[in-house]
Image (cartoon, rainbow, N blue to C red; front, side, top):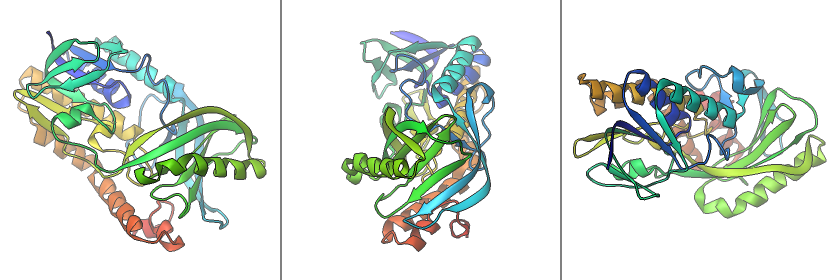
Length: 348
């Protein structure tokens, strides 16, 4: 049995941020991730919208391109261009690696190729390699299907499944393209420019997952015909996004406090799927709260939840409401517009 002050599960943006902030405050931190290296493979559209989340510091070395506007295509209509929609396209692998490096420099013990098999009711973590770890605080930053969340009964019940390809971009552009259609049920299509390439993908509700390959292929074919992207597929990825809003972000396993951060806590925006900024900020907060527990300060899981709600509840609740309204509709154009952030109907 290995003992530590704080155990972080997952070393994406939330977990790496938690590990760094707790280690800086003098705690013994062990952080685990099942991947072989930070951020690889990339399971992200890599866009950080500046107006939708908390600002993410330290982006400079990972930014591939700045974004200044959004073009929204509703069915076959001409695009609606929304100016003044700033953001950044990241190199997510590079971004994640930088965050992990910060955690390591702060003193966190970051271990890769280590999966989390289970967490017992007593707070003992068993890895896929058969090791046992115990900590006074566990930070679950292990994504939408979180093992840590399952251990305390906080499960993301609503998900969207995604598929994304990377293709060559035939000419530069500074706008993200969004495709809304009844043919992309429960989600949307996107084309995000990233310097000389573009991330092209779509998300749908799980019951339509088998349609994803065809949806993305059709979108790809259309953009090829328009001369906007290349034919060759340079990369393929996908994954799940939580779309049900924040779950209860804390619980106890006997005397072990468990905090959830990032997608594990359901902090991705239920309409756009944006979650990088929320992951970084919630991770830092979870690391600070965990360190306060170790130092004996008077803190609680309820206080952590209140902090997250102050930051994210209003935006998450609006997005949850709009998404559920859309899912109850027949996906006609008016409903698609009301369910998307580029239109004033969304904010009314």
